[in-house]
Length: 286
View (cartoon, rainbow, N blue to C red):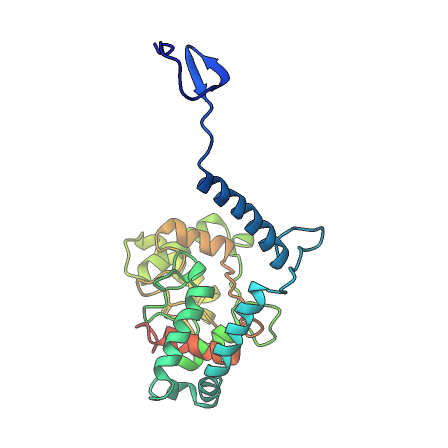
């Protein structure tokens, strides 16, 4: 327990006391007090000189007229002006020659990486390895072709983006609307068979007939796919939505209808070419 001092204090108290503890009336040091006053004056001067006080539809602009957004915009314009000649060079070169051009090759790849990290990682992942429903850009399995011209066309026009007249478009019917569960089970077993997975041979034989009548037109008789139609190869080990029986059954029953936006309204021609170069260099581009 704190006790009251037996001797009188040199410093008076504020009159506050709790549990025997008194609050001494020690004044603040003058240097600290003047520093505090200066910060108040500085704050008031700052709010007058620079944008500070929020209003209904904006904020006070400040007597100096400073704008951080205008400063950033000026920096962006300066960088754009410095890169203008390189971007013009990228736009004028054939796509196949951009990466090998000593003047713009590294710039195009670096710029494409920046575009990819900004706009593409949300779906394809930071490492471009994809995810269920979003293609892996590192392998050699390309629905619409993996050469640089095909990649460029996909980025520019998107997949099933109805806002772009030149978008890549394919549509698999939902077989669950007109096939029985038994027929879909047979188809599933046939797809498992042609992809080299464990399957029911009897059901797969029945599914082969259904496959020839309903699926071969797009996927081919052997299920090897068709890039002109965006039909995936069903005979390899690369699957966009999963390879087990349940995933294949779901795809056959309900169909898949993934969509990639067209980027030509949001990216410049140079940026589209740069990101096409970057993706093509990741290892899977053909």
